[in-house]
Image 1: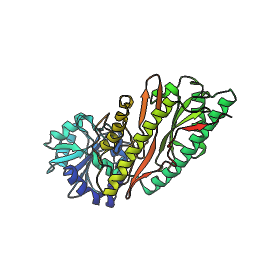
Image 2 (image 1 turned 135 degrees about the horizontal axis):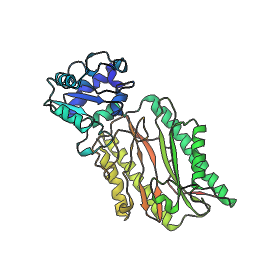
Image 3 (image 1 turned 45 degrees about the vertical axis):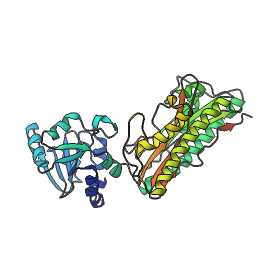
Image 4 (image 1 turned 30 degrees about the vertical axis):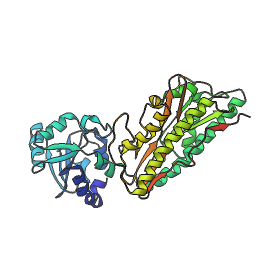
Length: 395
């Protein structure tokens, strides 16, 4: 709700200048644009509305005449409409004197998490003689930065997530040692219950996958899933957040039950770990130099290392996703594969760093840590990031 606060408005003019816009035009209908809905602190809406935040002058609002209650926190000028004819006329008046507006629009849908405004609404604005540019960097600044409380709760959640992962590996190893191996789904259910016991009741989930099953990055077992037997390499990906403003923690760990890892397991793990560490090194170097860093650049560093190892063909997803109030947030992603994310990593945002290698039918390996981009640079919030393949005795 920064946009409704005086402090938020003081930041807006220079950010608008950076994106080359005269104003930010937020559009919503029934939470179709959840970014606008959250930034404006809206209640239930069922009709179209436009809120204009200019670089100069006070904000202005156009909403339907039946939705005054949804906009009760709006303290500036407003105009209402009832008919579609009035909507068109009043939109023209709202945009009078404005040449370029930023909206939740992404050319070519290059940044899907920002591309929230329907094409028809963009056409309505353009018909008023107004150019539309992307609000992607504004979303980073106003929506995806972490609050002090959010960061504190995230750090606590990171500890719960890591502890749960280690307990899950030990539980699986003990069961395998008894000759009563757990199924993947059984361990997933246990993990989710354990996270809840630790207070993580929001956005909770996990993946447990063994061996070749882990070559499907978003694997979901059928029934009980495969048995977690001795000698298997196990991928555990788990996440969750505390309620009331907590930022989710999201981690992936790799362990072997009982036996020593094979040379192939070790080879793939080393490459994934080294790719992760190369990305983290770039973040630290840029922070120390005071140089900006774009999302795609971090992905490319990790991808280049996997390319050197002959494994880039099997790296089939972006390096990392934004994390804000949502597990997969709307800030910058570390991505030079699925998209070319050219957004800057601004102070106050967070994201995952999670390279993976997925050789279909053979093996899947991922290492995931979370990073908070603070005023002093990157903070890896995942406690004791994994450097070696973990081995859990079955006796």
